[in-house]
Length: 135
Image (tube, rainbow, N blue to C red; front, side, top):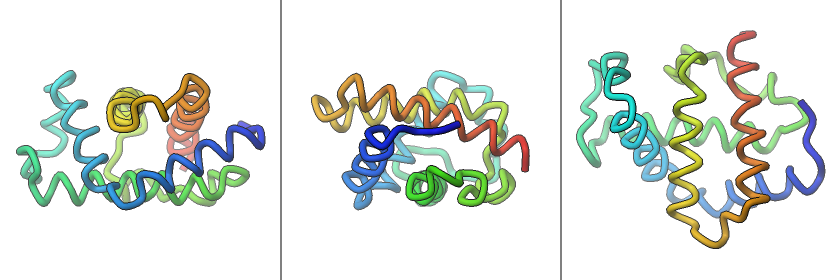
């Protein structure tokens, strides 16, 4: 999947804006995921999934940091993304997490999360599971 220069710029810009909050944003995205898909909690029995838990913050931060790293390598996403086992992300369920990430970003960044930003991030997040499945 290729990204236009404008899409690359907006994806990287959003990553820069959320850099200081990746753990909180990631945890919030996972909280949304578990609220809308409670059966997925069983994949994380080893973690404390309560609001604000260190486990949830750490895991959310790990996933969002991996996305931030990948955003810096949009021309080589395959080389930038770790194996799914390192992220503890099931590529088959990543689209559900993607929706939660989009809602979280829209909620956190309000008017800055424009329709163009949403479109670029949706495209970016759709590319991730395709690559994870191939690893």
